[in-house]
Amino acid sequence: MSKRIRGEGSVSHRPDGRWQGQLCRDGTRETVYGRTQQEAADKLMALRARKGAGLPRIDQRTTVRSFLLGWLDRKPRLRPTTARRYRQIIEQQLVPGLGHLKLAKLSPADVANLLAKLQQDGLSSQTVGHVRAVLRAALADALRGQMVSRNVAGAALVEAPRVPDPDPVVLSVEQTDQVLDALSDPSLRRLALVAIRTGLRSGEQLGMAWSDVDFSTRQIRVTHALQRMGGAYSLVEPKSRSSRRVIELDDPTLDALQEERGAQAAAQLAAGRRWKQSVPGLVWTTAHGEPRNATSLTHAFQDALAAAGLPRLRWHDLRAAHAGLLLAAKVDISVVSKMLGHSSVALTSRHYAGVSEALKRQASDSLAALLSRSS
Image: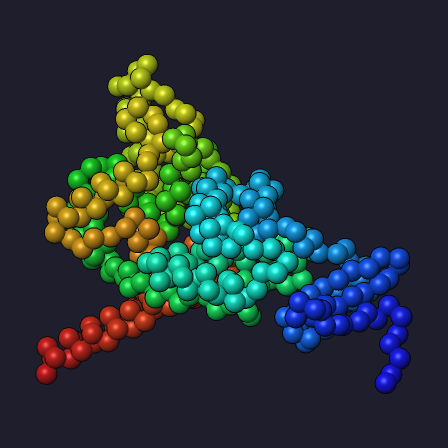
């Protein structure tokens, strides 16, 4: 039997049936436990590796609940709506499902079981995917802070729920004209026209200030997005660094913005003292100067489409329609990605792969119709 090296540690069987590994080094003794001899040996090996690398011992007492709630409080740079959504997921799904467990002992099986239970309880695959994403982000910070030895919610250990791709929104030029013609309210029509022709996110468009519009160079600078939190509106940083971009404007978009500026000046004159701008200088305001509400905007848009007998669309679908029109015009995908403010071409390709396929089918159907008429 080979002699054990000092500081290597030992594994022994306990009277209660468990196995324990002990490591004595620098005058201190640390113990790990396992249900099997191999599990205890593996934990002992990990402990030796951490000690050898000079890393601190993982706190075995911290619970998932205390870590997650503390982690959220240490994320001051989150956008308000993102922080609210994270807190909702942590308090409603993660803490009830995993909060009682020790952070250091959290396993991939624990995470997989929670995700499966959430789906069985009726949560959508997309929502369950968001739950996993929040936990993965939190554990990534825990790993960087040397609080855990691995990220047990990572893609290599826990498979993400499959989210079915929604049907792509593909509008032809004629169909976009039909959508715009259905909007009898002039300001709503101008809002939709700018959305279709620029591909701005709703928050980016509603947060646009007149100082961001340069009529001489025919450009819009995307510098902020509008968010509503606790009933109050504020401007926040764009979604990502790549979201900060400059968008070139065509004649119809410039005309729409010029008309909106004139309409806003008339509205301010009519409102008089009732004109209040809680967020100064916005392009899109109510009759009294307040920011436009994204939810109310969507409802007005959908009501107008329904009255005209047109299919239901979300406001965000106008951004997808913009991407589809660019792809139909054979604009390179890398250019489309930059115009949309995506972080990568891969992201654009993934989001709009369905649009490309729909465009191919549309072209095939058009060719078949043309050939049938000529035969």
